[in-house]
Length: 265
Image 1 (cartoon, rainbow, N blue to C red):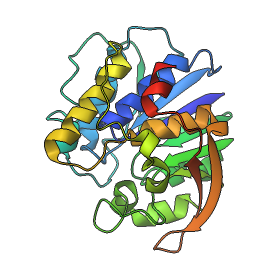
Image 2: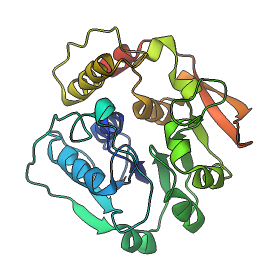
Image 3: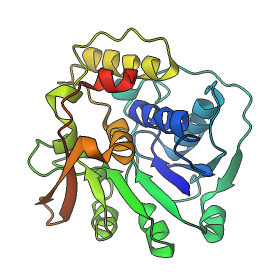
């Protein structure tokens, strides 16, 4: 089984990717594919950040392929106040990189086999994969039902490509929406983070940047999608309709442990 992640490499994408790679061998993945898309950052910076992140993972993990989407037209912002000057917290330096890098169209044309799909950025390029081959599981971070939106009247990933979002959610899915994430147990803004691991460092930097930017609350949005994929029993599934009329199957966190407790375990 493969795991495919579409990530617009900001800090929460970095946390989600490290979380996935830490458990990739024990979770039985034969390959982890990181599709670096535009969203939090331009596609070229997303690609650089994906490579930089993987090269800084000093632990064993399943084979990784990075997919370059810079030739594809796609929307993006550059949210340096939220994600740092380099888009990923200014935490990482370049190191030798030993994974395959493939252009998006070449990778998609050759894609085969069973897979799980995690979409953690705008959906622009996701429907092409869904139409080529449906995943065994499709989990994405995006959308909102009742929670106050955070970008142009929508959740950020939804706002950047509403048409692609509406197309993708027609496929069976579980959404990690703003409603899922804005849970008092998952807000780390007032938490003290003591760990010295790579993942703890990313989480700590994300918290610090929200304090500096004045954001209300700090949620590791994309890593909560990883938590659902790995521990669906920590959530219950609900159904709702967003303001565009999209019918969403979305998760509600019911485990009752704080995010940092989940991180430590």
